[in-house]
Length: 165
Image 1 (tube, rainbow, N blue to C red):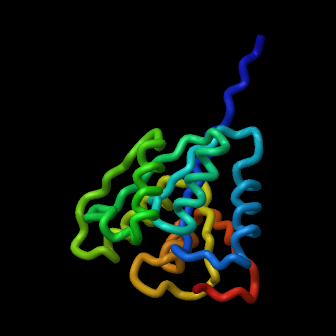
Image 2: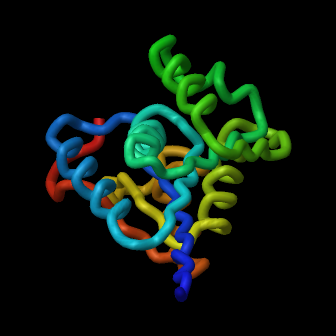
Image 3: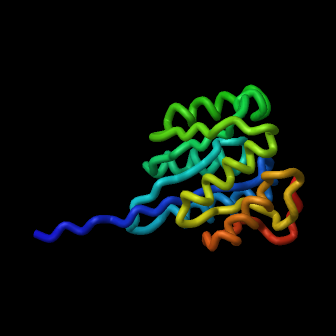
């Protein structure tokens, strides 16, 4: 009997913290499509509000292992409201692996370091992105630009004409 090993693919995510309702069904469908196929998938996420938590939740629902990439800072305290922090802790406890990055000088540098780590360890990247420049260092636009410079394939999930909140 011949045993066929499944190929392991690492899919990373970057994206906005706030996803408009008009975009959400499109994003969910796009993420589901990325999780289909015969390959073994590992999901890479920083578990931030919005796209990161949605991606990790959907991966876990599909039985996909998630690696949490935690920026080097007091990350949880800067994630947002109590619900977002609770979701972060729930997801973090469900992750197979946790990567804690070295502390950075600023929060923005820490976010960008986490985005670069994800790109550097991913076979492909999902970007929940409106196509606009990042609003601060390490934002979605910066991570997408870095992935493209590194030659990592990027799938952008967004509905044309819908503006970010």
